[in-house]
Image (cartoon, rainbow, N blue to C red; front, side, top):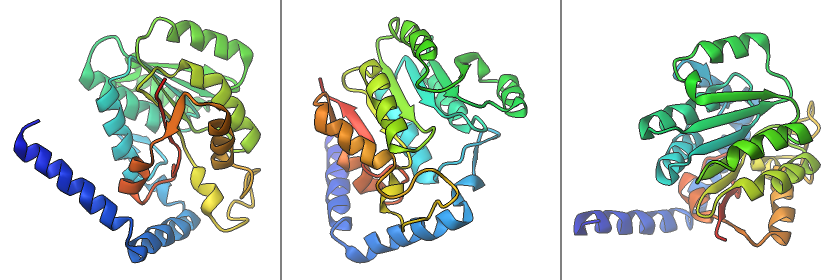
Length: 245
């Protein structure tokens, strides 16, 4: 890194720190999240033709992490329309090599499966239908992961505390040192109570509470708070876990 790049990074870090001391912009960011969720804002976007159901800020950040770590394998729980799988596969395609993304979902609807299988990037994708905590599925994924040097995990399936905590226990050993385990929808804990009245999760019972419980007993991971600081708008606040040992 040359002097100009170092100066740029230093200035950026200062700006991020100052931004996070500005209560007005923090309130704006939270207000946007809290309001936009009502209108399913994250449903408005796609990646290379497939609906991704993520906020643009998180899409850009995931691209950054994949490019930075250059994992040989990405494991994703939760498939939906497949946009996130396509995002991961597209960055892995740019990196090159025999890299792969695995998707797990208890329900893969026929039209979504067909669309994913017809996509040009499907060659880098493998899907398993079933619960992300199913022992047989975990065994198959472990077998694939054993052959990979760098592994990254994204958890975005059912958002109850118990389910996510079990996922964290099962998938965290697969994440390699220096890589990331990303837990989506931790924002549920910070939203008004009953914001998800039609779902099983709410304040006190969600991915963020599971992350807190997990970090209390697992010292192999730390919370990368710098990511949340620079994003401001993210559904994964305090959900970017980096393996340090």
